[in-house]
Structure formats: structure tokens, C-alpha cells
Image (cartoon, rainbow, N blue to C red):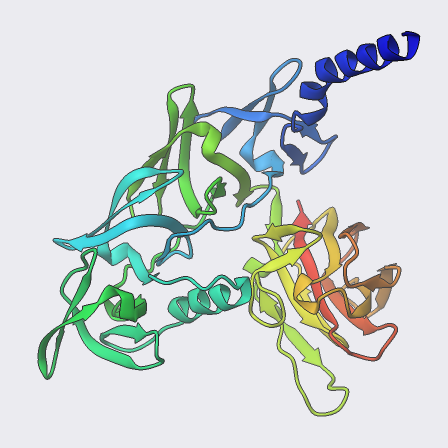
Length: 400
């Protein structure tokens, strides 16, 4: 009888505590300086002031003083609309009418965009993340003077896309007009010469949404009624504020190396295979992923290699998270090194990591840059020569 009563009491206590145990923590915010905080985005205004609601007093911070908040989400099922400025909208019911792209996003709701702001559409996104990344990269790097339909059998059709419905893609080509079934089209690349490619400079924000959409906003206004964001091309979109899962300001106190041009890069092949570095992508050209997270900013390199930047002004620190990209499938091992030059050619090593192996959580690094005129990042061998040494400098940034 005593045992039964004890069990019942324990079950009762567990049932009362379960909601607290299962309740997810609020997203993490990382300021450029100062302690991290947790909270949900409550408001944003045109001056760049952000307010986050937490368990206690609301946390207010200027966007320029924030490194990032929240975590990017991988895209859910749906077509991928690739914008000219590098953004992506995950949507269903995509159609093109009167030079406008229409669709419905789980996060943004119904929307329409001028066709000139859209670089392409992946109509049949592959389930494999790397394969989808390859499609988006192909669209972003496209050249030529016509629209292109990339068919699921590997063929291509060129011409002028006259619209898009639920079932067909009308294409006007040299051979005349042809209606191509949507189920046969893997992706559309729009004429790059007609795409509005101006990218915003100055303060802006990378926004990640709950459905995996990612956008760069030159202005964000958010309150209890919802969020309104303006894109570089002038388009405006709306979303419930709670659909914003991540926010990363650009043009503030954190300057990302992937937005700068290096003065030199060198990779020394172990045998004959040479590897280039990639900005905001891993060394294979896919999005940066490590520790179960996705990252918008960073550098992808391969051992052994070295990249060097001129520092255009005094910076206080270099910061990053060090990892082997998840595409290495828990393999690969490297040592990261940070060197600085005082302007007289006197290089000194300011930081050397432990051995970073595939599958390990990203390791944060912070390096003092006092007196530095140039900065070099090195990736070296560790355990098994250069085998799958897909090194990521995640969120590699200079702090003003």
C-alpha cells in the first residue's frame, strides 16, 4: 500500500513537472560584447533597436551590437525561390503572372515579388541537402542571355518563360511556343541579364524563418502585430514575428571575413588535388553545417591552406567557431592557426587550436588583434594527412 502511494505521488509530481521539462529554452542571443542572453524577438524599429522578451526584464540591444540571435532552420518541403540577392523563400503554389512571382510560404503567408528580383526557382528540390545546395549555387552563378528550364532527365531548354501555372511552364523558344509539364522541370533559371542584382550595403539583417526561408532585409519593423521587412530591390514582405527563427545583423560592429576580399590564398596539394576556399560555403560548395546547426557566414577551407587579409582599420578581436563540416561524415581532423603581422612583415602566431575532428561540436575562438595590420588563417593536417579535412571557420569575423 505504501509502495503504491509512493508511485502515485511520483507520477503526480512528474506530470506536474513534465511541461517544465519539455518546454524549450528561448533562442540564444550573442552580443558582439557582453554576456549572452535568451529571449524571443518582441520588437524591432527602423533605428535598428531590437527588443527580446525573456523570463525577466526585456533585453534591448542595437542591431549593430548583436552578433546573432537564434538558429537557422533547414528548409521544409516546397519549391525554393532563389532571389537575386541570395535569399531563399520556401513556398507552395508558385506561379508567374504579369511579371510577378506569386506563392504561399508557411512563414510569410501569401506573397508576390517582381520577377526581376528572382534568379530562379527549384521546383523539385532534392531531399539531399548537398544536392539542393548545388542547385541553389548553380542558379546564383548562372550566366547567359536566356531563360533556361532544367529538366529532371538532365536536358535543358532555352528561351523565354512566359509564365508558370500549377501544371505547365510555357516557354517561347526559337522553335515556337511549347508547354512543358511542371512535373518534368527540376528548376528554372531566369535570364541573368534581366535580373536586378543590386545588393544592399550598409546595415542589413540576415533573417532565418521557421520554414527554412532566408532573406536579407535592409529594414525590419516588428511588433505584436507582426514583422514587416524590406528587401534590397524594394519589395516588402510580412510575417508573424514568431516565425523569425534567426537574426544576424550585417554592417555593424562585426565584420565578416567572407564579405572581404583576401590578398592571398594558397593550398598545398597532398598529392595533386587542389582545393579552393569558399565564402559562406564549405570547401565542397555546400552550406556551412556543423554540430547539428547551419551557418550563414564563414569560410570553408581544406588542409593545408592559408588565407590572408589586409586589415583596413584597427580591430579589437578576431572571432570564429572552428569545426569540420558535417559533409565529412564524422571524419577529417585539422589544427586551426591564427597569425598576425604588425605591418613590418613580422608574423606571429596568436592562436593554435586543439585538434578539431569531424563530428565534434564547434569550438569558439577569440584572438586579440592589437597592433595587427594583416591577418592569416591557416588550416593544418592532424591525424590522417588531408583525408576529408573540410575545415569551417564559422562566423569568422573581425570585431571593431
